[in-house]
Length: 170
Length: 166
Image 1: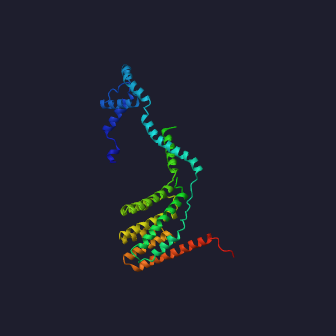
Image 2: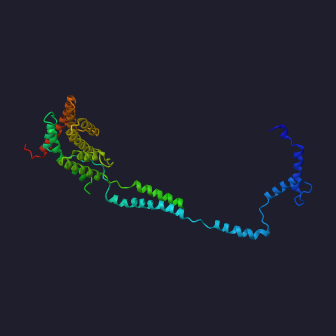
Image 3: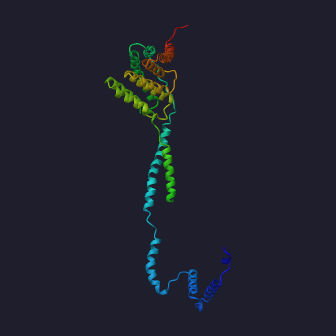
């Protein structure tokens, strides 16, 4: 702050004194006080006092403000909220039904543990075809074709065994 | 109860319901694989190799349910890759056949029928590519497994037979 700001000037002191006099002379209207000090004092008084409506204007104010106040007191329609709640509750209810309805079924049909199903023993024909195919070099793919042919019957047995063991035949 | 409370309860129920949804996919997966193999047989019988190949690709392309034991899915998938390799060899595409066997063997190499078949197809692919040492190695590994399977089969048959009195 500048040094000149620390000390009020004579003019400022005069204005402050005039404002104080205007505030003190509430009823008297502050005779002798400058008009700007009177205006400032009036504004300060107005800010402190509650908002008053003159009795003459009361019926008009009541007619215009009362309906607005009544509208505020009435609860807002909750249709939007209800729709949001319903959209969450409905799928949740379905999920809850799934959860609780499945439990008795699980008791009746316990979860199958992971049991390895040993493949069926290969027939001697299949093993012979496999042994022949390991030699390679023969007529183009003949041994491999025979192995492939023998595997078809074995494959059916293998898949059937897996399906029986793991409930795939339901 | 407020809307917020109801929402919270509903969301909890939703999460519970979803987390406990039953999983019953193992049987259908195996049934589907069996069906595709049967269709591949039919396509091959009709001479339609591409269609047969498409059926088999669908088997290896399907995601395996988590409740299928690894050994079971391995058997099904390795057998399918063997068939794919055989089809590629028939189509004179040994590189594709080799890739099929690589994929099949990536599931594991226990000494069983499916792995032996893949090794045979691998040997044939190497043979077609002119890589004799690699072919011999693959055939040799397949033969070792075949010997073992044969011994087990003969052993089982010996156990089943009435046997002689001491």
